[in-house]
Image (cartoon, rainbow, N blue to C red):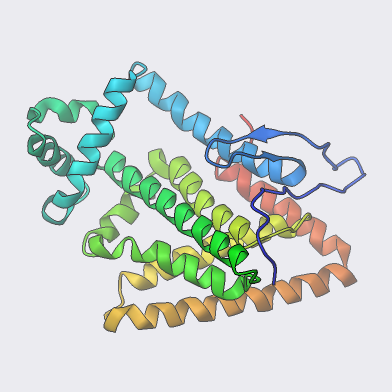
Amino acid sequence: MCTSTGDRNPPQDTSSGPGGSASSQASNEGYNTQRTGQGAQYTDELNNSEDLVNEVEEEEMPEETEEEYQTKQAVLKASLPFVHQYGWTKKAIVAGAESLGMPPMVHGMFPRGGAELVFYFYEESNKELESYLKQNVKESKEKDEKIKTGPFIHDAIETRLRMIIPYIDKWPQAMAIQTLPQNAVQSWTNLSRVVDDIWFYAGDKSNDFNWYTKRVSLAAVYKSTEIYLIQDRSEDYTDTWNFLENRLEDVVSAGHLARNLQETNTVLSEGAKGFCVMTRNLLGMNNR
C-alpha cells in the first residue's frame, strides 16, 4: 500500500557503471512537475514521440491558429454523437460540422480523417480519467486513508474502459485505426499516458527497472481487457471486470517472480532491460 504525494516523484537512476545515466529534468504540460533519472527518460521518450507526431503534422499542413484549433475541437466534439451512425470516419466529422452550422468542406481541416476523431476522444477520456484519479487521491488524503494499490488500479482501468462503452459497437474500428502504421506512435503515446497516470496517482515510488516494467505490464493488462470488453455480452460487462481482476493478479505474481530472479541473478535483469530498450526503439520511442 502507498499513497500519492501529489507530486510526481521520478525514479532515480542509481546505476554507476558505463550504462548509468545522470539525473535530468523534463517538464510536461498537465503534470506540473519535474522528473529525473529513469522517469525523466520515460517522459522524454513520450515527448519525443509527440514531437515526431507534431513534425509529421507540420510537414503535411501549416501551423494552425488558436481560432482554427478551437474550431477543430468544437467540430470533433460535435461529431461524437454521429459515430454510431457513420463510425470513426470523415462522414461523422462532416455531420458534426453541419450540426454546428458549418459547411461540409470543413472536413478538409482533418487530413487524417477518422483517426483525428479517435484521438480526440482518447485524449479527452484520458483527461477525464486524470481528473477522476486526482479527486480520489484528494478524498483519501482528507479522510487520512491510505490508498490500496490493487483496488485503486482496478478501479482506474475499469473507469477508463467504461468511457468507451457508449461507443462499444464502433470501438473495434477505432482500435483498428490506432494500429495503422501512421497512427502507431500517437496511439502508444496515448496508452502510455493512461498507465503512467494510474501508477502515479496510485503512489508508485519505484526507482529502478520496475518503474518501466510496471507500466509495460499495466499497458498489456489494459489492452487485453479492452479486447475482452468489446466481445463481452455479460450484464454490465461483469465478465470483463473479472477478467481484469485476474490479469492484475497475474501481474502481481509475475512481479514477485521477477524480484526473486533479480535477487538471485542480476544478469537476467540486465538482459531484460536490454530487451526492453530494444523493443522501445522498435516502437519508435527512442530519441530521434
